[in-house]
Image 1 (tube, rainbow over the protein chains, first blue to last red):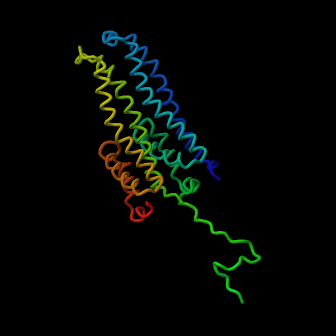
Image 2 (cartoon, each protein chain N blue to C red; image 1 turned 60 degrees about the vertical axis):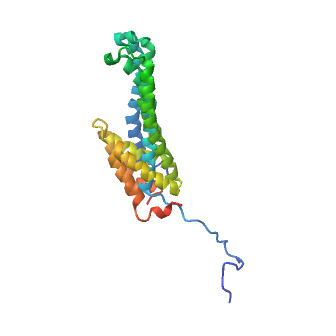
Image 3 (spheres, rainbow over the protein chains, first blue to last red; image 1 turned 90 degrees about the vertical axis):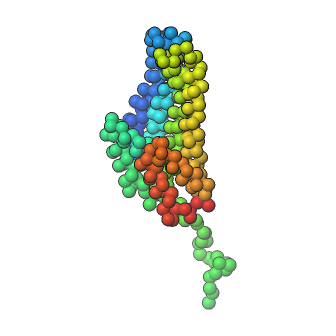
Length: 125
Length: 141
C-alpha cells in the first residue's frame, strides 16, 4: 500500500529536516536585509537604504526559502508515497549530497528512496 | 462441440473483460523528469533574485559610484533572463518526457546538453543515459 512504506516515510522526514531550516533561513533573510539596509552606511549613501536592503532580502529570501519550501513539499509528498514527489526527491537529494553539511542527511535519504521495496512501492520494477 | 472465439456469446461463466497492462514506471525516466523539473524551478528562483540583488549590489559597490542603482536592476534583469530561458526549456522538457511525447524526448536531450555544460554534470549524464537507452526511444510517440 502506498504511503505505508516505512523507508519512504523516513526519507520524507529527512527531506523535511533538511528543507525546514533552509525555509526558515530564507524567511529570516527578509528582515535581515531590511535591518542591514537601514544600518549600513553604504546603503544609506546609495539612497533609500531600507528599500535596497529589502530588495536584497526578498530576492535572496525567495531564492533560498523557495528551495526550502520545495524540499518540505517534496518531503511531505514522499512521506505520503506520491510518485511525483519521488521523482523530485531523487535529484534534490543528489544535489544536496554535494554539500558537505547536507550529505549526512541526504545520503541516507537517497538510500531509502532507491531501495527495491521503495521503488516497487512507487510502481517501478 | 463449441469453440470460443472473440465473437461468440459469453455463456454462463463470468464475463471476461480486457484490462490494459498496468503502466510500470521506469525509474531512470522518472528521475530524469524530476531532474529537469527541479533544475527548472532552481533556475526560476535564481532568475528572480538577479535583478533584486543586482541593483542594491551595484548601488553599494564603490566601483560603481555615480551609476544609478536602477541600472543594476536592469543588468540583473538581463542576466536573470539568460537564466530563465534554460529554466523554461527544462520545465517544458520535463512535461514532454512525463507525457512520453517525442518532442519532449528531443527537447530533453537539448536540456540535458545545457545542463551538462552549465548546471550539474552528473545529473545530466544520468539524464542522457535515461533517454538514450535502446528501448526508451520507442516509448515516445
